[in-house]
Amino acid sequence: MIPNDITWLIFPPQAPMKFKKSILIASSSIILMAVGAMGATIGPKVFTKLSSIDNLWDDTRKRNWDDRFESIITPERNQPAYIFKSADASSRPLIVSLHTWSGGYDQNDPLSILSAENNWNYIHPHMQGPNNNSNACLSDDVIDDINDAISYSLNNMNVDMDNIIVIGASGGGYATLGAYLKEKIPAKAYIAWVPISDLGAWYWQSKANNRKYADDIFNCTRSVETLNQEEVKARSPLRWELENKRYPSLIIYAGLNDGYQGAVPISHSILFYNKMVKHEGGDWEHLVSAEQTADLLTRAASPSFDKFLGDRGVFYERDYKHLSLNIFDGGHEMLTEYAAEEIRRIVEN
Image (cartoon, rainbow, N blue to C red):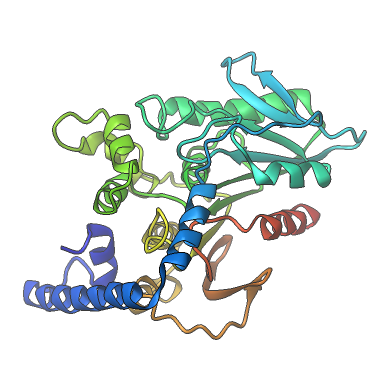
């Protein structure tokens, strides 16, 4: 059976049952052929390389933070974090970098060094640590921890209030989407790389791939015998009701190969982008269409690149007002150097 998040995109809910059945059969065939072709043409070395990329963006090893960074405990919530304080007398941007699914505040974060080199204030909060228990997984405590990290930074660093950036990859992208919808101290931009948006869909996707993430989701949603759907909804940004307001700038990045050789299918990014476009008044012409989605999910998108993120081609991009979606030539990863360049552009405008 095709996962629910994909069927949403293939046909509208009001489609006749006979039509749905035909599309499901055809779509299943396309997906199976794509997976079969992938297995036949991609060798073990490529799988190993992409698997290592996947692991990089859920690297739980503790980093040896150098003297530029300080380990702190926030006074309001007793939350550990690593910070970098700009020494400039004038205010500087603040980068709120959110850890990956299985990590914590002390895990390796490639963006930290680039933040220090650019003399940006930086904080890497703990946010209840790994997403394997009910205190984590975008609980209210996690949202409060993100707001706590920003509040601490404003009180203890020379932060430019007009240039706060929240960014994360993988589980950090998931937390970025959550912070975006439930922010109390608005940031200028939220940047989510390869994010998870629906824990229910990701549970079955992870279970099919024999990943530990399925067990993590089961545990953090207080599930017993079957998946707790109420908790899944409460922890899935894609399923949250939106407030009647204009949300800040959101930029989403997804690697085309993610989900094939990576932890999170790009459907999570596409569906969330479409959700926000509809909320902001976008019509069908502004959404990622079912045909475009099918091309991307089955990797039938054209490889002729007109735009690049650093040295990576962009298969597909979509923009509407202050929302942006970019599907690039890659897997489950953040292109860190490009991410830093983009932050520079944002804070300089």
